[in-house]
Image 1 (cartoon, rainbow, N blue to C red):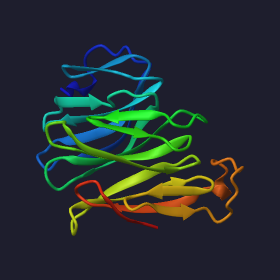
Image 2 (spheres, rainbow, N blue to C red):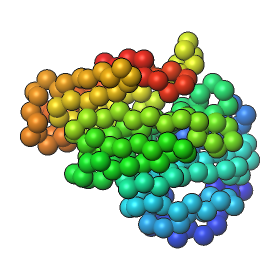
Image 3 (cartoon, rainbow, N blue to C red):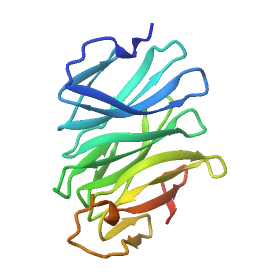
Image 4 (cartoon, rainbow, N blue to C red):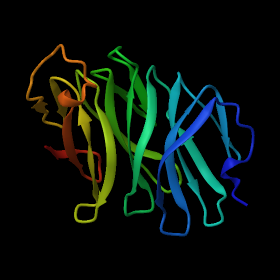
Length: 212
């Protein structure tokens, strides 16, 4: 019996977006939930704001070992992609923000991230027992959303790709800034011709090594 769907489901919906094998017959899943509480196995998560992200682990028999959500803040959050970290845990990429409102926060473990635009990227590492090791952001003044994350065996870090909207996106320390070719600060970020592709490389400790 797959127990991942058992228990009360009082949230309006739960939307998984990505899954990756855990190397032991089970898997990790990420996505988003909305509208109250959702039960995963014996764990009940409460959505913060309209949407919240979740990560859960299932064992080889489909039983939920653990589940976590975003730890609060003033933004909506959603997990988009997930990849093994090569050490029994996972890297997760997603977005956080609140429509056209900037400066919204997202809390992941002991880390609080603040959005620069309508939506920013988050990238985080979760270990095999469901503890968030670190979380970082990348974003600019537009609508920025990651699409996919992959494990990099050579560096034990991650590669992340996605889009950023109008103007600029900043990331890393020291800060790197990429500028949209049109440079139009008034462009709506979701117009397809104005959305730019971004690739980031992140090391195992959560530092952004480069972006292109």
